[in-house]
Length: 237
Length: 175
View 1 (cartoon, rainbow over the protein chains, first blue to last red):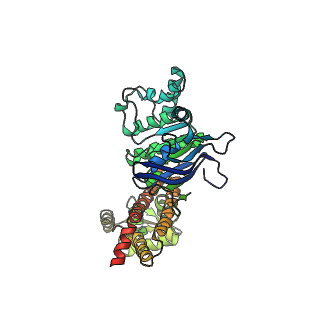
View 2 (view 1 turned 120 degrees about the horizontal axis):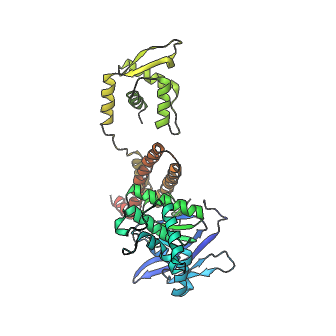
View 3 (view 1 turned 90 degrees about the vertical axis):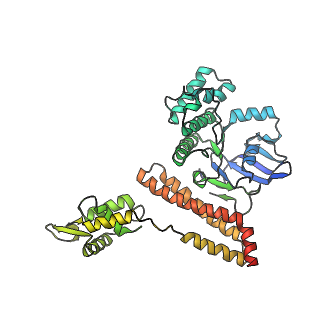
């Protein structure tokens, strides 16, 4: 979708500050993520992109400022003021995560890796496996369900990681360099399949990337520099 | 892109009419800028004069579109020479942007903003090319990829220059 003035935010960050020791990683970030958009967060290494993503996703509680989930609804949720158990629950039910190196569990088959979030949220195993297999097929991975991660190519493993992130039908998908470890063609395949699925489902995506070609798949880009989204760089749609 | 040599290359497949050549060209290379018939026929006439192609005779009815053309050995050599001579990498955009950046710094103007504006323009074009790739055939995808990689190279220069602006300004002021 394209963003505009009437877009409804699903996540709203205000005045985010965070430090690691003496290093200020975030220096007062304000950002609205709009419902259903694919947002690319770009910027140099060490600029604070990942810290921002972790704060938005409730992985990290910022030293200052707030992150609100569904701020326009009757009962908005202040993620940054929740305790870890509630944040963990929210991450499991409403958010999905994809990282640069899929971080699949090497001892589990592809279909079992994808099933994990469903099993953790109480879905019975046969149903979890059925849904996981179906999603793997939609990602072009027919017949690999019984394989271990070590038996898959990089592109296949990353598609399994995408399936695991999307199997619970999350409202927001957080992707940190989702194709950063892949060659150009595999990267394009993973991105295209992932974004087709999320756009069809209306899932919001916050995607960190240092790669302009990846950012070009997004509806909008914000550039983080020195822990801030400064005036002039800001947003391009 | 050099239209003449590209037409000559297309003619290297088999003898063709000007009309068919134009349509082949448009199909493979004409994205957004189809060749004019007039340009095709003037190019063919020039290549006949230069003995790169020859006309195989006219069919009844005359007119330029009734002539079939065939590539000559000299034409085939010219195509191979073109294929295997690398192009000079283009530096035009960077030169211009480099000049703008230096001038902005010398004038104590906002070079950061200048680079931002250019970056935003580049990203908009990349998004457009990425959208064009969706559901396109592979030929069109390849053309878009070529554009995307070139724009990306410029963007990397822009990002690196952005990171070096303070240092560059210092050097320019002390020069």
